[in-house]
Image 1 (tube, helix red, strand yellow):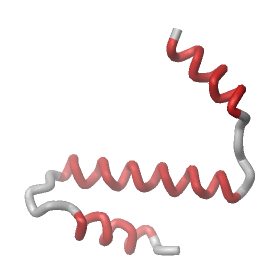
Image 2 (cartoon, rainbow, N blue to C red):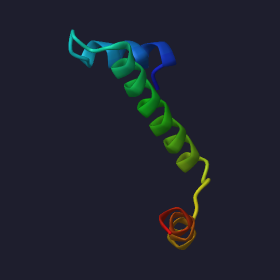
Image 3 (cartoon, rainbow, N blue to C red):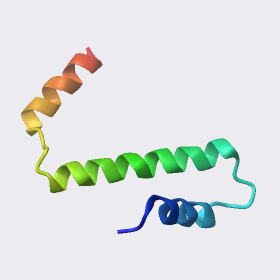
Length: 61
């Protein structure tokens, strides 16, 4: 697994030369949340589909 610094370096290398600070920060934010989700998955910290739909239903009403 890459360190945070290595991950950020990889993200920046993949970005176009005209990327803004906002673009870079967004990509880092997205990757951070993906990593958090994958870590929760490995730890078995999941919710059922039924519970997910119930939570989404509150937002969508």
